[in-house]
Length: 185
Image (cartoon, rainbow, N blue to C red; front, side, top):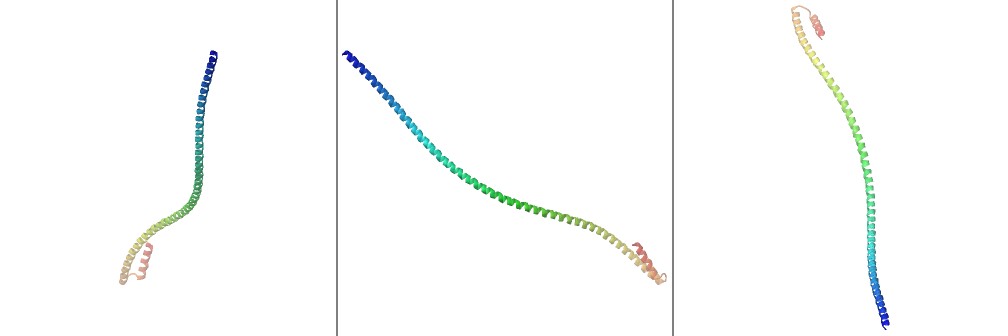
């Protein structure tokens, strides 16, 4: 019996060992199961986060695509306005260039006219100066002639007196005085 007890004890010990190993294996399996659940939760959580990140990324991409489209439309409109503005500026520039040329031609024409008028004025001033010299010369000559006329009239009056007194004839005296005046001129 002792053998049976020892056998039973050994069996019991073996069962206890098996039980402990089973409990240990079960604990280990439970731990692995808990780790697996944690991993699954983590994985699910990561997948959810990844899914949310993907969703957020998709939304952000959609938003960015919308912004890019709006920016492209704005850029298109800005280019169109720039082309229209450039066309208007080109027309304005062409008009300004034409007006400038016209004003330049008018200015040149006026300069030519001013030069011609200035030339005429200079000639007129020269002519006036010459005419004033001639006038002074003529006035001087007129003064001289008046002085001679006075002298001649005096001589003529003297000759009349002499004639009345009985000397030279009046015709001879006139001829003599005329010749003197003519030679003086």
